[in-house]
Amino acid sequence: MTNAIYPKLCRTKLLLAAAAGSVAFGPLAAETLPVSGLYPANSDDALAVHSIALDNFDGRIGTRLSFALADALQDAQVEGRPWFTILPFADSGNPPDAVMRGYADMEVITSKLSDKVNKVCDEKDRDGKCTKEREEKIPCRRMQVTFSPDIRLISTAGGTVYSRRDRLTRSRDYCYDDRTRPAPEDLLEPAIAEFAGTVRSDLVPHYYDGGYRVLETTSGMGKDDKAAFKQAIRLTKSDIGTACRGFMALEPTNPQSAAVIFNIGLCYESAGQLDLAETYYKRALPLDRGKDNAADGLSRIARRYRADRQLDAHFGQ
Image (cartoon, rainbow, N blue to C red):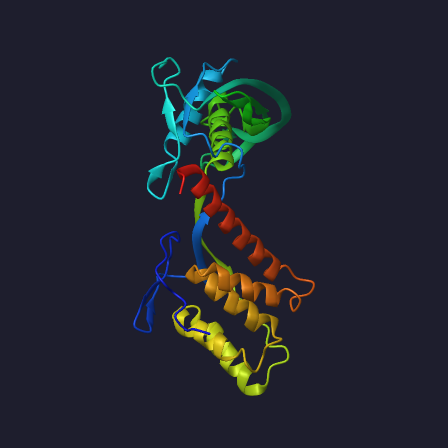
């Protein structure tokens, strides 16, 4: 087993920086290891599509949806390269790989809520103390906006390669004495943005920068190993390279420890060495009975491999 667990990898957007046995890191959450990399688009069906023309969308807010989708897809980049080129639909001299067609409508419903009751002073004494007050009822309402989009991506070679429809509802309560009352636009815009983001996630791989918790159980370890393990856990906050070497040093005497084996796998995943991470997660799987830590790790690795395949299929590598 090697201690050089933080190599420079071309396809891993690492948070780690290693040099001559020492590692420097930014601030991290307690007892976690940073993990970053490329994760797959939800759909594999549009990987052959490089250019898209957006047709005129139908519906009262079809045009606004098409603008949002154009922005979301045009801005999508992977490894510094645009994933799609968005073409004018009327550009017959440069035919797209696919055409996106769609429909979008909205419904606004305002419903009555219970009145808000305010106490209002009608008379005060010389000292400014209220001597007579009354209750004032303020009407309150709930505005509900439902956004209904329906899109299809149709290959110019024939056939629908992707489709999605949804029904997104947003609501806000207000009373007539509020300084600002919601407008339908206030609720509609986030719904449009959410749908455009979902379509982007369906069609384009994305980077994730975050972290996952190490396991901290010392069950089955001897006294000295427990102390060494706890020290490695503490070091995950400040010196991940040393922490990971600490976990690895405990493997020979704790080969059946779910925490030791899983944490080594997480170290390799953090460093972008997915093959070794997968090996250790598979070893941890039967040791981690009743929990999902190793299974989740294997799922992440599988998704990373899928993202690499999508990248190769799309860019022709």
